[in-house]
Image (cartoon, rainbow, N blue to C red; front, side, top):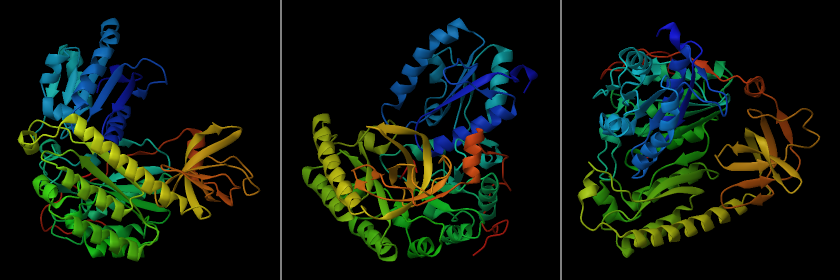
Length: 496
C-alpha cells in the first residue's frame, strides 16, 4: 500500500459470531501493517470497515441503516473510505453499492487479505471496488492479527461447514470445511502465549469434525491433549461441537487435560425429534442428552450451554413442549435462544407451516422464563464454592458503595467480585488471576462480595496496564491436503 495510508485512522465495526470477531482481528492486523492506526475513542475515522453477519433476518436492516447514518460523514469528507466485508457482503455482493453507492469497497469471507489492495485501488480509480471470491484460496491464519484482548485469544482450527441444516445460510457463505494442520494451530497458540495470553478458544463451525480433511478423525481430541503441553497456557476452550460428531474421546481429552476448561457449548436447536429431522440435524434428543450424561459423569462440575431456535416452520405446541422437556433435563447453565428467522436461499425459507410471529414470541418468552429459572437454581448451588477467576474487566461497577470487577470462572460463568482483602497488595487488573468465594447466585451471573483469597499478577495484566495487545504475524504452512500428516510437533460456532 502507498505511503498515503500511513497515519490514517481506522475503525472496524463487527456484527455476528466469534468467527467474525476473529476475522476483524485479522483485518486490524493488515490495516496496521499497512500504516493505519486505530481511531481514538469518539474520533472520526478515515476508514470505517463493517464486518457483517447474515445469519439473522435483521442483519440486512442493521447494516443498511448504519450505512445510511454514515452517509453525512462521507459527504462531508469525500476522502473518507467505507468498506463492507463478511457474510452479508458475500451474500449481497454488488447489491451493497447499488443500495449504498457511497461505499468504497465490498469484499467477501474468502478474501479478507484483499482489503488493503482494494482500498488503494478504489482511491486510485475513484470508484467502488467489489471483489467476492467463491472459495478460500489461503487460510486466514496467513494474515497478521491485532488481537482485541491481552489475555484471551481466538484460534481458528477450521473454517466453513459441511452440514446442510435447512435453517442455516453459513455453508453457502463460508464454504466447505477446511482444516488447519495441528502443528500450525499449536504454533499460533504458542505465539499467543509468548505474548502473555493465558486463555485460548479453539474456533470452528464444527470443531469435533476437525481433521477429516487430512485423514485423522481423532485429530480434535489429540489437539486438545496437545494443548496441555503448551507451557504457560492456563485455559483452553472450544466452540462449537456438533452433537452428531461428538465422541467419547473428546470427553476423555477434556477430563484428562488440566488446562482444558470444564465448559461445553453444544447447540441443541430443538428438543423435538420431528423438528430436528426437518432441520437436517443428524441426531435426536436422546442422543443429545446421553452426551450430557457422559460429560457430567466425567466432569461433574462442567457448565453446559446451548443454542435453541423457537418457531421453526411447522413447529407445533407438542414439538415446543418437547424442547421445554429437554431443557428441564439438560439443566443448562445458560442458553442462547433465538426466534426462527427466514433466510432467503435456505430450504426452511420455503417450507410450509411458517409459525405466526405472536405464537413464536409467546413460546420464546416461556422458554426464556424456564431457562432463567433453571440457571438461577444452578447458580444458587455454587454459593460457598471457591472459584478461580481470570479478571476480564477493569472498569468495575457501582452497587451502592461497593466497587466490583468482573471475571470468568474456569467453567465460563461470569462473576462480579470485590477486589479487596489482605491478599491484594496491589491493584487487581484485567488479565490477573484471583481466587474468591461465591456469595450469591443470580440467573445470569455470580457474585463474590468477600475478600479475595489469592491474587496473582500476570504478564497479561502488565500488558493491559501498559495498553498493549498481542500482535501476531500470520502462521501458516499452507492448506492441508488429504492424507498429508500434521506438520509441526503434535504432542499426544456461528454455533451449528
